[in-house]
Image (cartoon, rainbow, N blue to C red):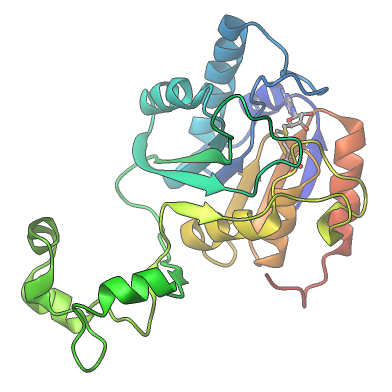
Amino acid sequence: MNDIIIGDCIDILKRAKREYIDLVLTDSPYNAGYDFDNDSMSRDEFLSFTRRWISEVVPTLKKTGVLCCFINEDYLFDFHAILKERLIFQRLVTWHFEPYPRCVDDTIDNRAEYILVFSRSDTFTFNVIREEPSSTTYDRWIEYVDEQGNIPYDSLTPSLKKRYKRENYERNPINIYRGSPQGNVIFCRRVKDNDEEAKYGRHPTQKPEPLLDKFVKMYTNVGDIVLDPFAGSGSTLVVAKKDRRRFVGVEASQEYAAVAKKRLADVNLTDRL
Ligand SMILES: C[S@@+](CC[C@H](N)C(=O)[O-])C[C@H]1O[C@@H](n2cnc3c(N)ncnc32)[C@H](O)[C@@H]1O
C-alpha cells in the first residue's frame, strides 16, 4: 500500500486482493506507438490485451468502486463496449487541451482525449465539484435566477422536473453564486517539460495533476484506496497522496517507476491540490 510495484499489471492483479479498491484511475496504453510496453500492437492484439487487463482489474474493485480510464478517439468506442460488458456506464468526460505546437492543417485539429467513467453498481461515492460560472454561463442563467440567485423549480426542464420533486429541489436549488457542478468537458493544459510535475523527467504521455485531482476528489473520500495499474511516472499516485487517499500503482518500466518513486517521496503531508 502507498507504493508502486514494478511488473506486469495483469500478473500482479491476478494475485491482488478482491473487492478492495475504491477507485481505479488509469491511463492505459492507447496503442499510439509510444516507446513503452503494449503501445505498438495490431488492433486485435491490443483489444485482446485491453480485455485481459480489464477482466483482472474489475474483481479488485469494491462493489461500490468506480473505474475511470483515459482513451483517445481511435479506441474510445471499443473501450466503452469492453467496459460495458462488466461495469455500469456513468459518464464520458472530454479532456480539452490547447493545440499541439506542431499541429497540422490537413484535418480538424485534435484537442481532446476522453475519460470513461464506469461503476460496479448503482451505489458509489460522488462528491460534487463546483465550477465558477463563466461569463457565458452567467449570461444564460441570469434569465432565470430569482433575487437570491436561485433557479426556481418552475423554470426547470421537463426532464429535471421528472428527476427532482419540488420539495427536494427547493431545499437545495441550483444557485448562481455556488457555481455549476463540474461539467463533462474539462479544459486543462497538457504537462510541459519545465513544469514542476515533470522535474524528474516528463513521461511521454504524462497526465496533468489538476485533471486527475478532479476524479480523485469526485469519486473518493479521504482514506479511500486508489489503484493505477499503468502508473507511468506516478501522476495518479501523487495526486492520491496529496489528496490524503491511500494508493497503489503498478508500472512495467523500471525507469518510469523510478520517476514515480521520486515524485511520491517529494509529496509533503502539507501539500494539497
Ligand atoms: C499511458 S502511460 C501512463 C502515463 C501516466 N498516466 C503518467 O502520467 O505518467 C502507460 C504506462 O503503462 C505502462 N505499461 C504498459 N503495459 C503495462 C503492463 N502490462 N503492466 C504495467 N504497466 C504497463 C507503460 O510503461 C507506460 O508507462
